[in-house]
Image 1 (cartoon, rainbow, N blue to C red):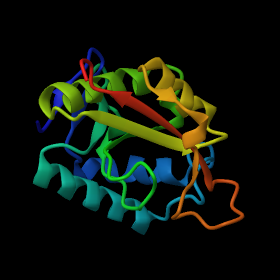
Image 2: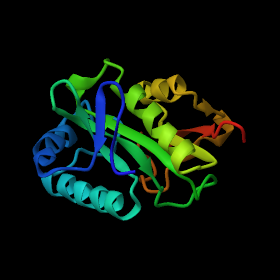
Image 3: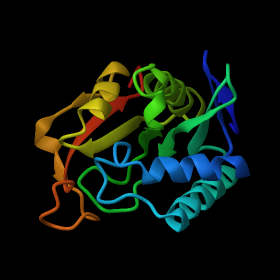
Length: 180
């Protein structure tokens, strides 16, 4: 599975032309509101290099999102394996980040539904998780729209975020593969 389409989006490998708009996204205070800090250009490019290599190696991961109608890069959506220990790991998570001017158009939910189909139908994963800060109600709404459910007893302090940070406490959502 290298790339695929939803009705309005192409989920594809990262391209050189994605670097500048992704760096702008990572520097946007609104986009990065629920992260400990904005990304430098070096961090942004490093992220693209890492997730691009994951896609090449595994055939799945965090895909760049391109709006089919315009060909415009609008962010990313995909699957990732969390790189920390928590009560729910090992796991495969679904995540997304979109440009501010792409918000409110249903792109995150549409892309997430497509990624969940890949996760369950193609990869046959038994479960997918997603997590975000307690204050990130936009992402939590996407999680709920795609059928994920939260048990507040599973909320956790993200081990890679320093104690005392307002971004440390996270909510955890889960979705099991249908029929399991």
